[in-house]
Amino acid sequence: MLHSVFTPPGARGIQCADPSPRPETAVTKKLETYFTYKLDLIKSEAVRQVNELYRKDLGLVVRDLRVLRQIGDAPGISVSALQAATFIEKTVLSKVVARLIELGLVERAISPRDARAFELTLTAKGRKVRERADRIGAAHEQEVMFGDFSQEELDMLDGLLDKLMQSLRRSSPAR
Image 1 (cartoon, one colour):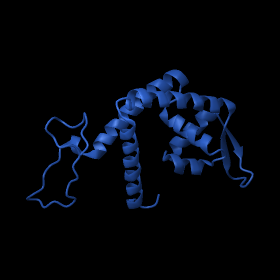
Image 2 (cartoon, helix red, strand yellow):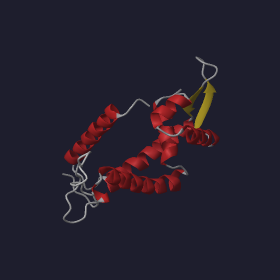
Image 3 (cartoon, rainbow, N blue to C red):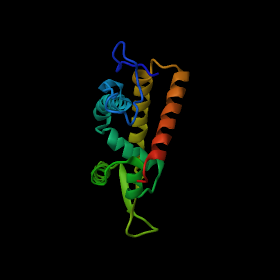
Image 4 (cartoon, rainbow, N blue to C red):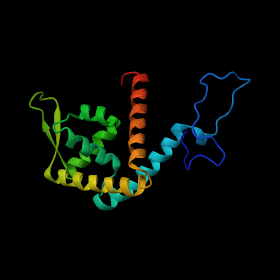
């Protein structure tokens, strides 16, 4: 059972509910016992904190850097492949890419394989910004987010999150 700052004293952590309780036996779960609620709080706070760091140092936010990193990991990526990889809504992604191009971090070129498509790559400036962002993010994770975790706990958490993601992907209809 997972215990955390989100679980009130005396509560039993995350509990899986019967998906089809009978009305006469249905029990109302407390909000803080829902795993998705805890994940959302963790994600929101982590993104808020790191956005402050990235904005102050680089003038960018997590979403910008997710796009920048994906382009860096897959030079020549198309916008449609970038959208599939980042799960960012198409119109929002177009604005992020346009901003990164305007800042001189990303280049867009017509694909030599398909003149109707564009390929995205990082500029030298984009690579430097990505390296700086990676150092900032790694330091924040090590010092703030996971400073109280042992390596064994980190390995276990990583494995459990991978397993959860695989489970969700298996049960999800194709995107």
